[in-house]
Length: 352
Length: 180
Image (cartoon, rainbow over all chains, first blue to last red; front, side, top):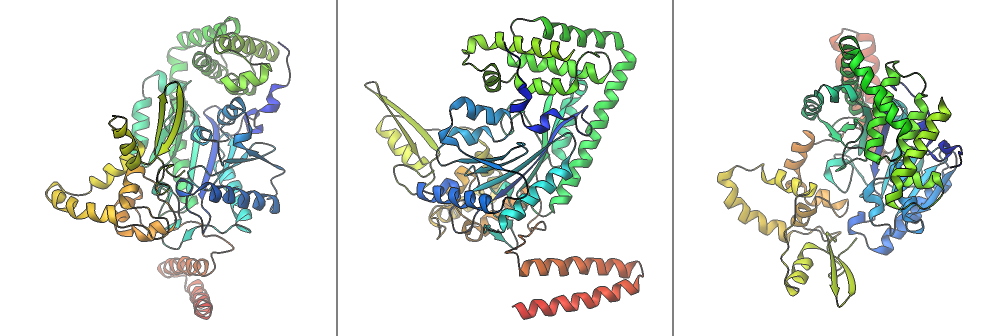
């Protein structure tokens, strides 16, 4: 397999470590907006849906929003692998590509900002960044929002705030979420306790790709549940302070395990490294699990030969659609595990 | 997407028919799906979904004693009362968890309030206001913020600041009246 600079197809934030990168993989802020004068997407007819698309498209072109060049994709014009890649890169939700008709995805060059047109709401503005960067992402999403509002008229009510298709997003329409890597809390089986405690303080826990998806590789997504009655900054502040506590708990358990059962832990993590560098077949689930172990090993200085950023890139590149893209050929699903193992071997060897 | 049969309600059921190796796909609303299903001899049971959760949240708010009586009164209202703008009924909303347009919020206000309380614990937006089109709301919000600052200034006996704030509030209020 030829080694290209694969990281080029990934969003830029993936190749950065970011603040508290030992626990927080990424931060994301999403704003839900609807245009005045149109029914919401679920009740709109095809003509209205295409008009909504055109209106938002031209707003993006008029206001370039100081966020670099935007690429406008018509979801129905791209093939299914490319669509799946968009989900794997977290640029859109899995639901968004289910029905590709009358949907647009607008993405900036760095792939840190994406606009979903005609998902559940007319417009969803999303900003992503590496590590613990809630304020940065909120600021970025707000800037894009203000900029687009220069030429778009939003559906807004003095008492209810931004009107959304589902009332669970009403008010600010803001969803702040953090992707957390919590291997040690999972290892000592405290994770369920922590996660259910979060539910009691208005924080949702979801899987890797959002609502209704499973969590692999000890990666969890936490986000605010409430959207009405508090300001964006208050909601973000609440999530931040809860997240800081989770980070601290994870770090405490890591330290305790390091002190009390260092050899056992080191053995387990290094075995995972061994499998990852020598295996000939790896399913995506197993790969994520092993990558999670190796990441922990690197954080705890037990494995020194691997670059942290490379590991994070691999967490993305080993996903099914992205894997096809980097190997540059169509892979049958039975061959996927073989190519995945090969990619990981080559990538880790290169980083040594 | 609208139901392909009635073109009125949102499509929530995906129906695939295969007859003599001919596959046809239909996207229907629940009402039309039931009709189409009974023609084919099928019975529809909607499964668990996030939307059903909303319906159960709405129902869980009423005590058991009132429930039967209320249900009879409510179900008429829920089925008959339509949003004038998009035609959605409250029972449509209970099925999908989704509104059809911005006007639904004012039309179904009374049915929605208990749900909002349960989900958000709060009823009034206190976050961002659109910059360009916010206009009067922005001024009102600023005045509200200054009022709470004023209270704080008084309680900390910072009278100089309090006087400044009071004058500024008056100025902004006049501005508001002029705009109205």
